[in-house]
Length: 478
Image 1 (tube, rainbow, N blue to C red):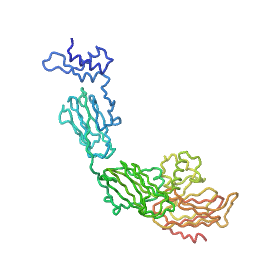
Image 2: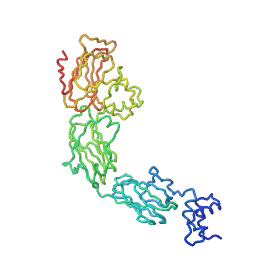
Image 3: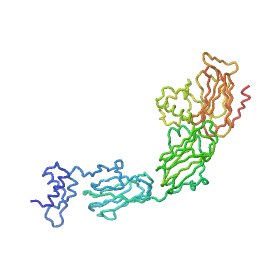
Image 4: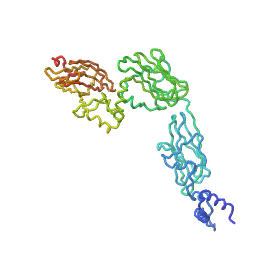
């Protein structure tokens, strides 16, 4: 009768591979024997772990396969128990910090110290923490500081070429008691509020809704419990940009309040905050951010144009094929395609989707412009212009003396309009038969789209003087 130890080993192997026959189990037992010791007559001793490991199918634990970074198992705060590692196998893990942690310590405890088994960080620059000697049954690896929802990856390796092992993973965390103060501190009172800008919102701002990433180490923070941050900005004009938008993304809910001249306009408590009072009035604004826990956040403040937002949405819908007719977003002309202004280039669409724009021509203007014989036949002419220096734009559009003008069944007239870098119409002027004259301050470094047209067939003359130019418009008008 076999020894109880042999019967027990066979039972374990059958538990792993119940479809094997008695002869299969006998062959498995003999093929995994430990080598005989000196002067030992027997062929060797039974190695239960090698036998069970080799029984097949492999000894997968409850997590299934997690032998690569792409299949890493997410470690809960309660850890894992009853896991297995096979010879030469790597078991990968990920730990997502639930809050801001000074450190997270992960300890692997093995059922038996059967070989050189160790933990390593996925980060190749991190120090490797390894068992100091073979046959150590437990050891640990410790992360550096972790931001909330930041992932720390590590793996456990079974180095023994023939023997696997069973193990458990435990987690011990040390929370942060404060975050690094950001560069705006101290701004925890109205008197020390940080002054920020509220620039015009671009089409890319509105359509992409992208903010700087949250970073608890070097970004904006409510660095202590019950901290408060104040920001102030000024709105001087709301002629076109009639709304104010304050977007705040945070790791945890916070309370945001927006004031104008001391009066509360809006208050929101959330993890993602969008405060957009409209219409906005010129004046001094104060943004207050307050929390009851440590928090890292990012934010963006803009002035926005409701009409500009609608134009950006309509144009994106047309490019996506959701709007059959672009209407007046991009009137057609017949002269081919020229350079696109930045407010079109920044739209979040694939460049190959811009084939629909090939029926439009936009002429770049790098200096003063005189178009002495401009044919307007219901198809607009587009000009992209701008200036590297601040100054005044002067525009004159008139019918050519003695030129053709055929109204046919349409109402006659001339018009010119200017779109800014956000796609918002800054001005539009019209006249029955000209001349059109306009002056406007240009912002340096910005690109504008000038459109001139007539609903009738007309020969016209256009003169544009940019800041720093030497074109004297009164001479051109004679």
